[in-house]
Length: 362
Image 1 (cartoon, one colour):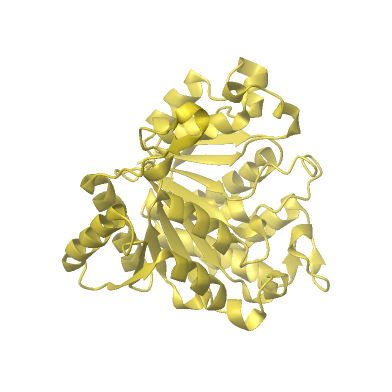
Image 2: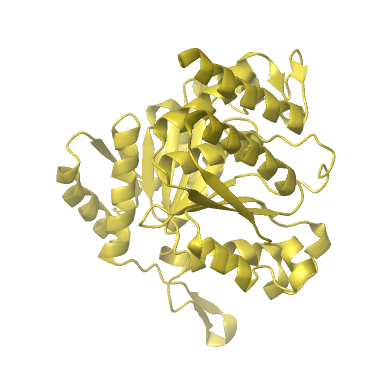
């Protein structure tokens, strides 16, 4: 069956790296006899310039019909002075809401030959390979009422969750742990917050449905500390929106380059939006030097979580690792003794590895 993929290049280097992901997916389709169709639509600043909106209705409708969506990046100084409803980031928030993407997955992996770029000691980061599963549509960011009172001298933000909202993200955390090393760390603040007490109750109830997963509970402040002192102890972390936002940003610096980090945002039926963690990098856009790896790894996540093509996803990840192991790198990776390549060259190296590996296995 043909899978329909919508490409949202967005702004800056998003347009370059999404082409890299498309080429990798085309190679996978060819070698494994899959059928992928691609449709390109605008989002962010490019959509503002063309259609007067950061998220045109045609883009929303196309994404709703798709099996998965790949997004490059949005934003840039060109639109910084726009009113809030005409900011590129509104497009990203809008499409997440339109598709009901409740689960954000952020894998963090320490690539051995890039550990020198981490702000932490290499021996601390070495072996790190974790996944943060963050609830994306509830909590403080979406609770009502959020308001100012007493003439602006007092404020109220409401942390609101339903049991169903907690259950579905906890299920996603358990399922992710089953696909990895079978260990789930649930992060909360159950010693203070009623919402966290309910969260911990739900995790306890769900545990019996996943007997192959070992579960730990940890308070968010301790989790933040252990991410820095011993990140390799974690497999899958599941947590609510605010905690997940903070912890995933903290963890993102472990690898030393945002150019290596993919992400996935999923809804309950497996349809997802996949994007690199990095921004649009307008200062290097069009120069052919952007690192496509985060976008390519995001495509691998798409194959894993939306299409259930685990072997194909692993092969892409293997191709990335092998290319790095061979000494190839883009400029952002701060490698002094390797082989510096641009976006096109890095993409070709990864594609060539995939094709060679499949032929060797035939």
